[in-house]
Image 1 (cartoon, rainbow, N blue to C red):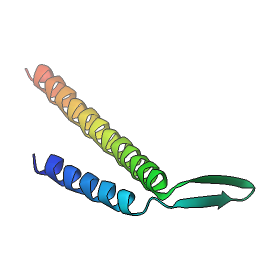
Image 2: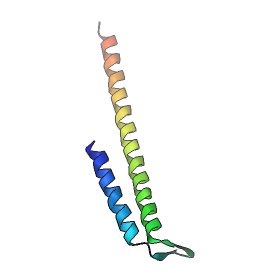
Image 3: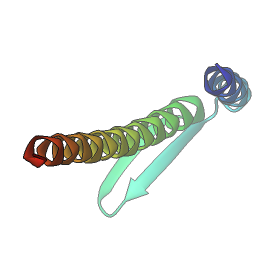
Image 4: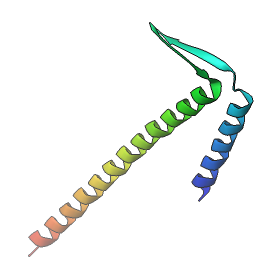
Length: 83
């Protein structure tokens, strides 16, 4: 619940920041240029960050789940092997 509240506070802060900084900006990378309002750029950067963190979180959860399953299989294997 606390994580959801923190996420909503960060989202509200980003929305307020974006609304106050709606001036157009130009992003340049090598030969690629993109013009958009700062609000869109901030939103896309925040969204990209959330996706990256979500992927890391998913990977950590899968790793922990696989390790837990391996421990469970090992415990069952040793229990079955006992006479």
